[in-house]
Length: 83
Image 1 (tube, helix red, strand yellow):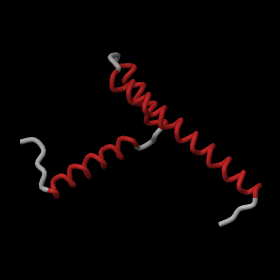
Image 2 (cartoon, one colour):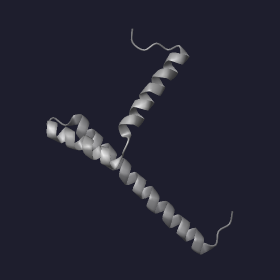
Image 3 (tube, one colour):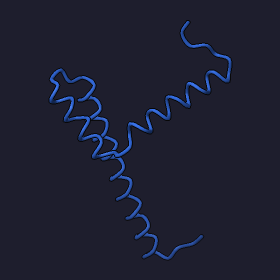
Image 4 (tube, one colour):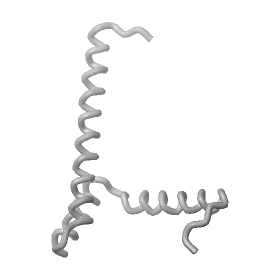
């Protein structure tokens, strides 16, 4: 599909802005997850996980679903985890 130069510039601009936005969200989520996992103060850990829920809503459910799906794949493949 050929685009005219003004449309191409608009598409490129939208693409770059959305890509940078996603990258920022990922970096923010990673920083909050690390702060929550490595924090020694209870208030810091709680604040990190509350902020993580605001930045990426539903991360707990997605993490749980991924873990359950991964476990199901291993059980179907015949690989035994643990004893």
